[in-house]
Figure 1 (tube, rainbow, N blue to C red):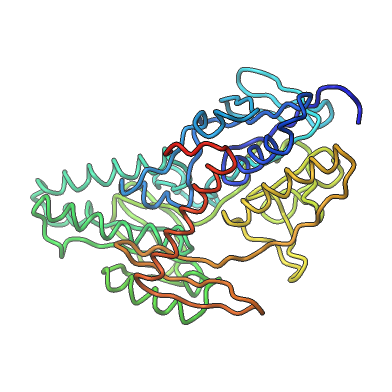
Figure 2: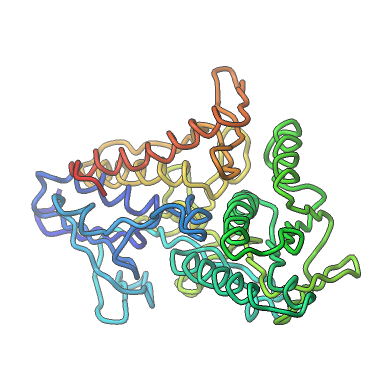
Length: 403
């Protein structure tokens, strides 16, 4: 290998990005000519799978980057990426330009409003820690205002909450919202009959990727929390006080939390990468970007194909973690002349939080079998999966101090 410094730049400190940076630091711990750079607009790593809990102040979901990388050979740059220059191999932020020999694209995604009239102006997306804080403050203010509202219709409108999107995030948030708002109603001595929570889904069913058995049980739990599920209902427009549906119905509400879709950041669109479905970067079996041998992509940004099914790998945390480790290993192998490893996604299972010590989901078993769980036991597995990420962060960073 040529004896000169090489810069490896990782864009994004989400699940895949932070894992890739930590694994790179471990692999190159004795390679003093290799410099690893991590860039993120925030000085913390966000546990995005727990944002629904942060939105009701149930759990802390951010870990300072400095704690994670304190013992690692990683230079952190706090700033939003404004440009990726693939020709000159440069990344620009608001404050600096960083050269690279290898780059890992792990910038995550942002909310997709699908050009629905008023949606970007009057909805509250749930994609970041800042979003979760806005939602919590908004709900708290509405409950407080409802306590002194004398007009019945206006009081009910303040206590009507719409969740747009019946996927994983929407279902988990709706369940947490129900528990949280019921506490507010008790504290403010409000009438529970004034409370309405709607879960809106454009497709014919919520959670399209789970089995019919688990979906039915989840729907039962949601209905038990007085959450009204409206399927085959598209949100066609929104204003400050009303949500209009494709069924010619509307809902008077001051709150619409949007979890209905994601899109890739604009900086990736402008970079020159070959992209496919959803604007995700087309990658080969090693997660290398098409036509750019020095660039890798993972997580929401990568259109990775499952070789067993021929279908795109979902944008989920468990896959981003696997991809982060693989990309780091493949960069190491490429620099030192070893054979790169093909990506084969491993499915651990999926659990859906339903609030208050409840969850539903399944664990993967050998021979493509699944073992389903509902209720308290499922919640234990769900908690264990969340804690596993924290454990792996501590293991990779060799920092066992409590985050």
